[in-house]
Amino acid sequence: IVVGNTVRILGLVDGNVRAAGNDVEIANTVGKNVTVAGSTVTLTKDAVVNGTFAAASAILNVAGTVKHQIDAAVSEVTVSGVVDGDLRLRAGDAEPAVRLTDTAKVGGTFRYSAAQKAEIASGAVISGPTMYTEKVVKNPAPFLRAFHFFRTTVKFFGIILVGLVRLGLGRIFSDEVV
Image (cartoon, rainbow, N blue to C red; front, side, top):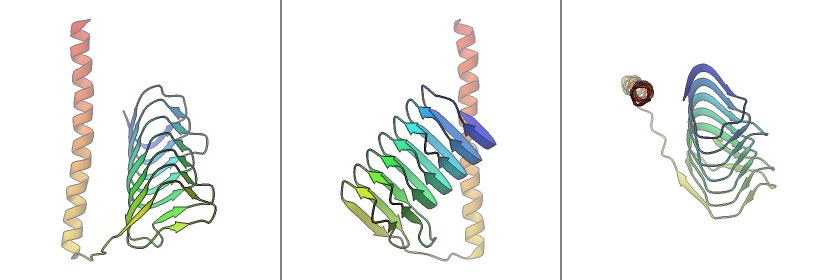
């Protein structure tokens, strides 16, 4: 579990990665799953995730390899790497919010919801079906936007706090057992 303004995972990780930060970059092999939240999340070209990759971010860049599936809620995403399983995205209102470059490869189903259809380069390979759900763009009142932002921020930090408490209690109980 890592929390910080700038989080860079540069070394080999045998287990899971749980990270939150303004700028999160994963640049090496992760043995299991990745769960990440950040303003900008990047899976570099040399990165390999041997499990599932789950992300919540404003900007997501996937240039590496994900051996299972990607589940992400993003404002905008660019995929130029390899996803051996399904690619499931909930994207924002950017135009276009979802981009697959000519080097992108999806081994399973490509399912996404966005305000407009994805920009898929001619060289991109999608082995399974592509399922698009048009996202209805709502323009809530400024008060409701502020309330939603506040509620989302409180939830996010609540989850981080619960994780840190669990981590701390785990250390206390493991010290007592040893």
